[in-house]
Image (cartoon, rainbow, N blue to C red; front, side):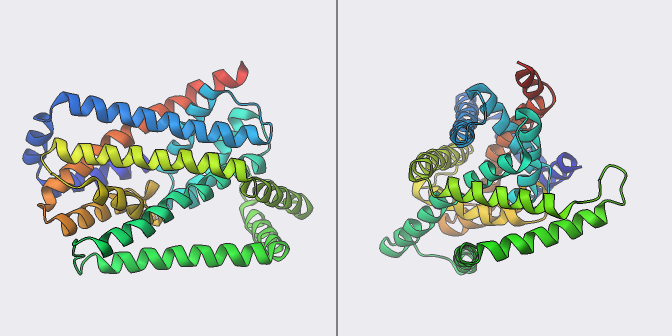
Length: 331
C-alpha cells in the first residue's frame, strides 16, 4: 500500500511537469550524471549503515558492517512504507532490527531513536547558518517562503522544549508512556496475534528503553561520531539534488540546496509514506521561490533525485528484509 501510494504521488508530480516534457528531459540527461547520482545514493547508504554500526556496537549488540548497511536499508524501507516518517517508521524499523539481530526490541528502538535524535543536530545547524547566509548576503526571501521559515523555527523550538520537559520529568514521562502503551495493547489484544499486556513487563521495557536512550545520548564520543556521519549524510543528499538539478538544466547555488534539503525534512511528518510528496513539494516551492527558475524544471530535478533515491533504497531494503538479513543473521 505504501509503495502504491508513493507511485501515485510521483505520478502526480510527473503530471504537473508534463509527461512528454519529463520523459524528453530525463532521457536527454547525460548518463554520467545519472551514474554519479546513483553512486552518491549508494555512498549515502553506506554512510547510514556506518551510523547504525557505531550505534549498535556501543552496547555490544553483535552486528557486522555489511549487516549494518543492509539493516539501514531495511530500516529506510520500513520508514518509506509507514506514515509519519520516523514517528511511524521508527517502531517498524526497530522490529526489523530485532528480527535481524535477535536483540530485545527496546534496545534496538533505543539505538535507532538515538541515531534519529543526533541526526537532528546537523539539520538544526544548517538551518541556523543558512538563516545567517540569507541575512548577510543579498538573497531576498520571497513571501511564499517566509511562513516555511517560521514553521520550521517553531518546530525546532517545540522539539527542544519537549526534550527539556521529558528530561526534567523523566520518571513521570515513563509512567505516562507505560500507561498509554498498556491501554493501547489492551485494546489491540482483541486481535488473535496480540497477547494481553502485562503492565509490569511494559514498565520494565519502557524503563530499559529510557535508560539505554539516556546512556547513548549522553556519551560524548558516540554523539560526536554519529553527528559527523549524519552531517556527511546530509552533504551527500544535498550533492545528489544539486547534481540532479544541474542535469536537467537548472543552475542553482549549492548553498541554497544545502539549506533546502534539511529544511524540507519538516514535511516528513505528513501522514504519507516516508513523507513523500510533502518533501518534494517543499523543495520545489523553496528552490523556485529563491532562484526564480521555472517550477516544472525544478520539479523535474527533484523527481529525478528523489525517484532514484527512493526506488534504489526500496529495492535494496526489500532485498535486505526478505533475503540478506535473515541469511546474515543465521551466519
